[in-house]
Image (cartoon, rainbow, N blue to C red; front, side):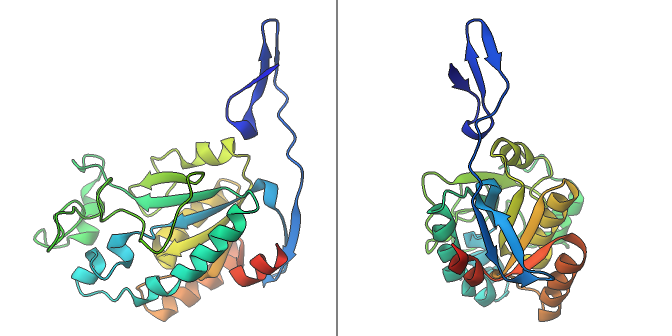
Amino acid sequence: MKRIGPPRNSWGAQSDLVSLTRVEIPTRNVEFQAKPQNLQIDLSSCALMIIDMQNDFCSPRGWLASIGVSVDEPNSIIESVGQVADALRNNDVPIIWLNWGNRPDRSNLPPGVVHVYNPDGNSVGIGDELPGTNSKVLEKGSWSSAIVDLLKPASSDLFVDKYRMSGFFDTPLDSILRNLAVKTILFAGVNVDQCVLATLMDAASLGYDVILLEDCCATTSPRYCVEATHYNVAQCFGFVANSKHLIKSL
């Protein structure tokens, strides 16, 4: 009987019979420290989602830096993100890179999204040319939207473009996660109080278990935004953990 469909969500098929039974994935439980309670998770149903670790948000030559925003905080987590990605990838946990990758024509963006980043209509906003480069801000396929050089995705990793704060809106992200049989999502990336939090909240609303890896998330916002995000995640949506405790448990 031949399997058809994604490996983790496939049917069996032959000429006279279709089996709707899925391939059983062995449980692989690990335990580690977290807030508000310690956790036991099943690696076989987990994914790591890395959000917006791209040049425009992290590089000193990128968009945020060009408008005077310090990218020190986003850069401070690169090593931790790379380490947890390697550790989980080596344990067969899917790695999903969720980046802002805008259409060149910006035709799917309402004015409210454009205004946030170009409030006077004359600033350098989404899709505009980044000064000193030939790149367009956050445009799909451009240097601006590319993952920073110090992070090295693997050929087995998955890539999803987004166009809002939440990676679930108007994207195939939910379908991909369900075909991967994912129930628990580990979150890393920037900005923790914006795109990371918005995506995490939507994930929780869709029924996924959500864990924020605090040492793998950063923001260019004030420190109190980080504290409020950690509080709200642990209080209302899921759990906050440190990647070093997770890696140790592996």
